[in-house]
Image (cartoon, rainbow over all chains, first blue to last red; front, side, top):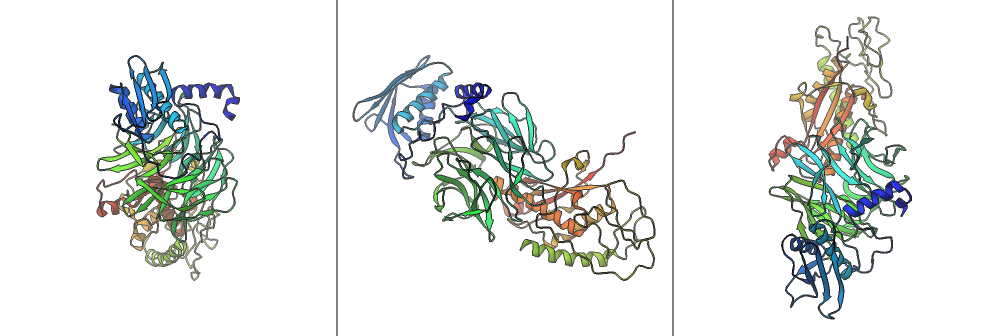
Length: 392
Length: 223
């Protein structure tokens, strides 16, 4: 863990761990063979002894994690406990009657305790750390103005990061830091800025004449890929996180959009155009040739996002007025349609996606469990929400 | 492909523009661009016709000097060299150039240019509007231009932000080929964030797929 070297970052990380997320799994810790196929049946679980907010949180978290809440007769797992001043949980395998864990969760709010219990259930059943205590950032549009917000992954406790009454776009978290990059129009031009969540300090990362858009931070947190039209064409660039060391990667008159890094930092995937047709492509952040990612069965791909385990690329496919979330193996292949929606972003577990869904009343965020295809809307009352980014 | 279309249309357009503006009487205090004379050329900021003996206006440093048309006995017009966009594009100037300019959003309110679905090609039907903007800039050499690109909602957000930028860049390139210095024009894409119509039908979408021109004025000098 490179970030642990620096005491300041350690402090940040501790803060993050407490308020935002559990410890990140080390490489190799993820169980890569547990989900060899993209489909899985929901795991039937029974909850007993919970009420009110705790029951609500458990139900939401577990359904997002691929569980189905059922009666005790149908259940594969039984979770019993309660939530007085502290949330208790006793997880039993209904078939073998073996106790998986029996734990009390203390400290923080009841809500935080319930999330921690959900994560314990997910870890005990799947072997993969849960995501119930993670944070998301997103764009909230009200009328002509939009702001960056961040919240718990279920939309709870949303806070405005910006209050510019201007337009923002594409917020993205720096890995393991309380820092975000996004495009803001607050200074008269679409500029990429970095924004420290604690100090509130904002710095320009890219403020060139023309549009500077769609920032994507490298997995090591040191570099940013983005699009700029400073040369008179819109091309892909990479720079250090402070904007120094700018390097132009593509030189085309065609469009590129939505860069996303591979988890090993060796590739930047983006939406491109070949012979007039939209396609996904990748390029090394050191430069070199643009490589097309072979892809069938999904027209007009945009908004790729590489899974943290390196295996998949989720993206939006558009046909007519319909937007679909699709998936391909990272090396390319036949696309599989997951659900209607757009702009997918992976959670750290490489299993859950957060995405934008167009509804009759505007746009809303939704969570999708890829193997079971269970999805749930993120409840919120802020306005039209889009462009989610997961802290991971 | 796009370049080919744009170039051929610009050639045609330049011919039309020149034949029509060549005989107009210049308004008082305004120095129109010479018919048949190249104005700014990419890579250079200014160029004056050496055949001109009559002194023109004396603009400040860094301002393109439009060629003077008041000279008598002009030689036969030479074929107009049409600037070809360099492979790397017409670079946008440093943001600092525009930092203290005032935005006039009313100047070109009637000159909003509309685009086809998922296209950044400037259509023939829109040439007149872009030309009016170009003519105005030629008449007011101290001004600059901000081109805003917009999209309808039928696309993903960041794809649309890129598409809006390509629309703005197409208009910028059109105006550069029309004779406006690249250092006077910057672009900005709003994607689908600033629709003029909020309905979800073709009528609304066609109004939202647009390029808008904002005149940038230098601040009055401080006393």
